[in-house]
Length: 328
Image (cartoon, rainbow, N blue to C red; front, side, top):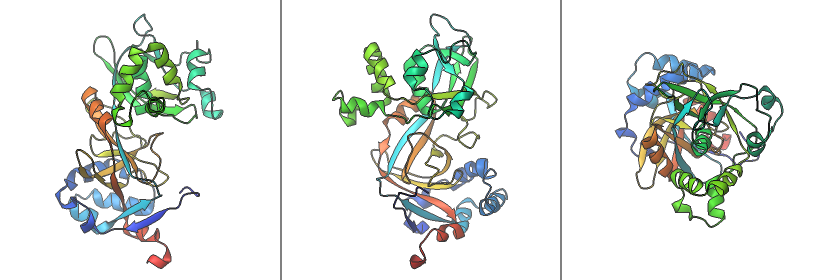
């Protein structure tokens, strides 16, 4: 846990979770099984073995877990992410001229490495065969890097899938927040689609806007994942539409069930599984909801920016061990 944060833990009762009884606990249990075998702690491993025995789903969670509210003083925020689909080719051409790069070995050693601007305008990547594919839209490529994974449709219809391999070590800076700072848009107007359209209308200024974020993400090909399954998350397993979330692993163990109470225009009450991370996902009450693959999922994910609260379901002994002695 971050040493500088003032962290507060509250063990909750399932009866205080809004909408708990109405959720599809069987769907959540199925997703939990997908990654719990990769959780190495003995208490999690034991629960994973119990989950494999096909228990009553709701009873399983209520009997062996306790919801824990983890607060670090920051307001809760839920956003959405998705798996983009880009048009691309394995060969460079007049149309397909924007490279999707694999990670050079020196970028793993020298931290931070070159900035986005230096990578794209310099010669550090030239002639090294690090191009996985070439795509036709630099704006979509920028947002592919934000999402961390995606599919590239090649001429003829074949798909390749790419996943996060690493970054250059620079902190991500929000281009949406930069447009707000400049007075170009009001906060309620900004979405991924608005940013994309602005960059396309203003290609020179748009390129400079994308350089505002020095962070750069590198990829690896993960086409062994079947097309009918979700992309690989941080646990190297496929994630599930509207059941997987990205979290800050400094607070939430990867693989843990998390009860989400998202407010806003379309309230969401659902048990999800923490199976992914993201460079912009920082804090104990911060989560990114996975909306699926393609443009429709992207539009829905881009509209999500809502308050609420979330509770991590912890094994019972682990939950109470988080409390100060005076609270037990």
